[in-house]
Image (cartoon, rainbow, N blue to C red; front, side, top):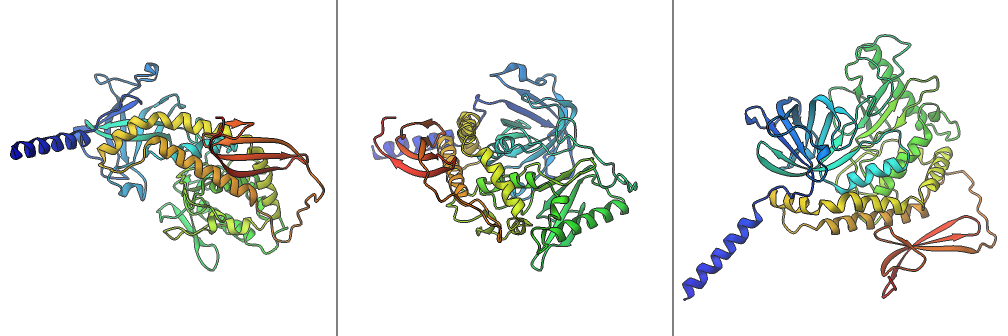
Length: 461
């Protein structure tokens, strides 16, 4: 009898384990099927592998591309730095023809990124903050050579072009001194690359500038780019923070918006790497911060500006420690912040819910596929990042930067409360407190707004 019971228990355990280790499409998201030539594995970040693909969106059949019997052509390779070391690989794909994928604008160049809530939330924050162009991204499940490889974000890559960053693009090997100053896309990078210049930034670290477009430089182009960033660096580190020298080279408003995004996300890499800058063709052309890429959220208690807070790894916060001392930069930050806070917070929280919560079943299957255990549900993950973002917003609103030596006048007279609103962790607003954690927004007669986190139990909602 004991033997039979033992057999039954073992069989039950075996069957449960079998269920937990077999993954497949959730049926809730679009699926991208990719088959490489001769099922060749994708092992290189530099060499593309020929492949075919088709895209199936059962909920929106008009979005389907190709079919199993008539697939479309593409090429695929690996991408990423630290993410490429993960067992689940990210990919760069190049379509044979410019195609609109899942409603995103036509292009040949796309990425399949790891699924992170901060990417979805951060790109939308870029749109809200009015960055010149921010990549679009859509969740998809991917089957590669018949193997379900899980949940990804199908994402527009950063490129100069009509449907991406729409600026003038300078040709490679250009020697014309009159056009060399225009049409650039570069990245302040934390990795060493072949297409890169390097110069000392201060007495502690240097700065790497990776040039993406153009990506092959004549001596004239390389010399100009080196001299340009030496001039930018000198202007930023000028002891006279009232000279305005750096503002003649860099767009101060775009840099202020970029800074706010990194602070709200609490992204330590914001001024460390994947820090893109571009320059169009115009008489008064300046370098503009963006597009956004590689956005993380530390989800910790924020006690200082992100570039001053410690992380588990070393990082170099390029320029921002100097920019924050500049009065014009601080004023630009305040102006951009007042456009965002508080009116844009609730719509942003609603966007996060609408674009992440439906990924729960796919995330569950992804966890099975990659043998992840003790993982949070999509609801918990979304709630977690939203709570962190709202806390970061609350902290930043109370600590807007003020440049050293700049007088900031405040009204010491009496002010009256004119309105009180409560925002819960889903971003919903009410005149009465919600049950649980709230952000209480108090508007005063002088136009100022105070935000305080409060806990309310047994409320009417």
